[in-house]
Length: 423
Image (tube, rainbow, N blue to C red; front, side, top):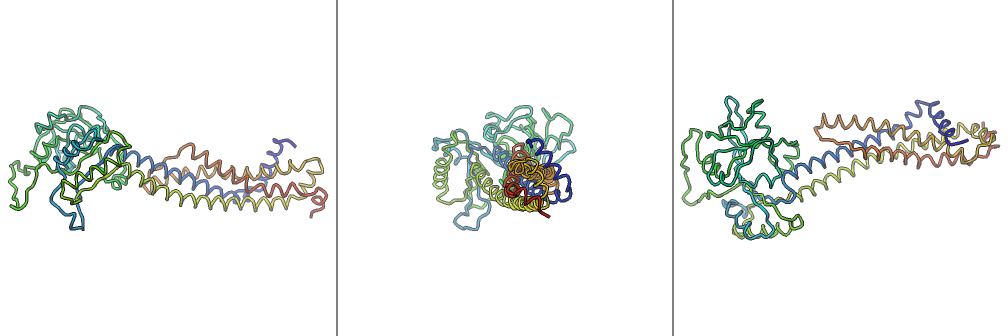
């Protein structure tokens, strides 16, 4: 009996007991679908993390003010400032570029369309440090920063919300109570709300970017009626106009991130009288933490998938042993007709592997369905790669081989005379 005949006989054996065969492969089906779902969730989460971290910059170090703290030693009015930024740029040899950020939540308006948005005051280095790209127009330049120019670059979401189908280039929008000329529009970015919250990053699609001096000297100094506001100040407290909310530092080489972090921390502590009222964020470390969490999730999901495959493999072995027992006389006839032990072994092994592959294919289809449902109802991003399908089919094939060998060997070892006499 050649290999083709063995396959035909094996498939015939499966086809003659359709319901039993289907119930046998259910464990494989659920195991493979769990593997597909696990890998797709993991890959989707990984892609999301990479995209969000890329927006923060893999070579960047971000410094923010500590907004809330219960430690009285960390409470201070001494916020990070443009002077701190200049000191870091001057002292730290690893720095390539530095950009400040001053953030204000204000109303913006174009004709009858209004929205409350995050206005970011920054300089000409912001675009390159955060890896943003322009859809059209240009970015602010150093001269506009120095002159507190009324120019603005808007995110693609703001464009859609305020201008709808109009071209925003050259138009004027009112930021708080001041008119700004739109000089550029940012390229749209796929932003995950979950990752935005997890990494505490701004949604680039809804950013309104203006020169930092425009925020400090114009937006922050005016009230809604357009009058210069005279702030009441505590005589014991001095508010520095150079205070900023955040700065981003681009390091020349990624290998120097750790050393740069330590040096920057020492510089800031010295300038802030050893009060750690600032927060240093390294996107590369955030990515590692996210990946570590994802690995734990993958281990749990992998264990569940492994248990399902184990149960499915045991089910295949159990059914194959029962099949060998009920087909003992058939085995005796085949041996008497000239079939060798290897022919019998191959016949039953093919049957076990075929069951596993069928279960694997059904599991792949179910896995695709599960990923779609997870995306729709859980709101998680999923991504099915071709290698995950190959892996799942491979796992089901190996399961069939491992759990099919013993029943197949048991069938091949039966003596022809004893098999023919079996009732």
